[in-house]
Length: 198
Ligand code: B4P
Image (cartoon, rainbow, N blue to C red; front, side):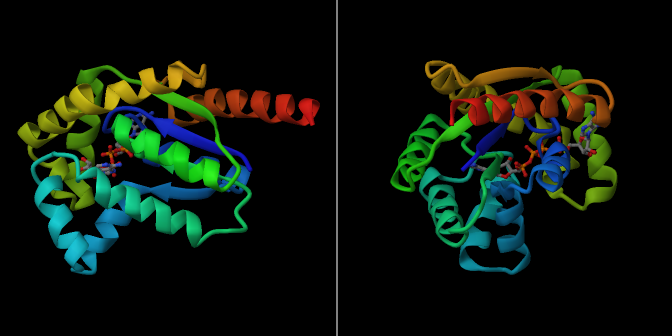
């Protein structure tokens, strides 16, 4: 299996680039943000609980998202690999993911970390808020809270994977295609290295 984490602050392009990467590499896309939004749309108890956190720009509790990812992994036994988008967002989530993957005799190949300035993040999210209907994109104070959550709880995830030398930083500013090319170069390099070692 070949598993990637696409990492970065809110608005860094994770969702945007994931769509292109899964179609090129045939990976199964697991976006905790998308799963949570579909639970909200379906007005499930999980969605109703998650909405109160998301509307404030806060992270949803670890147990909830870890359980969601665990079921998604179980529901896709034949996948060639997974692209994790927006997960893990805390060190506890990263530890849980490593455990889940090792039970399936696999691991994370690489963490591709998109780097974007704070000013650009805020501009992109406010811009998406004009059309997305996402309540967490319209209010600048909620966007500020999401970025603060990232700094406080999520940035540490890059440190966690750096210990295992799995993090590659990618410039996340420029055109969507330019960034996609940078991501593909890294992935292609890893895939050829894996093929040589087997
Ligand atoms: P997510 O759905 O993961 O979304 P995101 O962080 O807002 O953004 P993403 O990075 O995917 O957006 P993109 O840049 O593609 O999270 C939403 C909420 O869900 C969180 O705040 C949290 O409450 C909850 N949640 C999710 N996962 C969780 C977890 N694991 N644990 C706890 N809570 C969790 O798009 C942004 C905009 O930028 C778009 O309009 C796009 O068109 C634009 N854009 C992208 N690339 C661009 C480029 N190169 N140039 C210009 N614009 C660009």
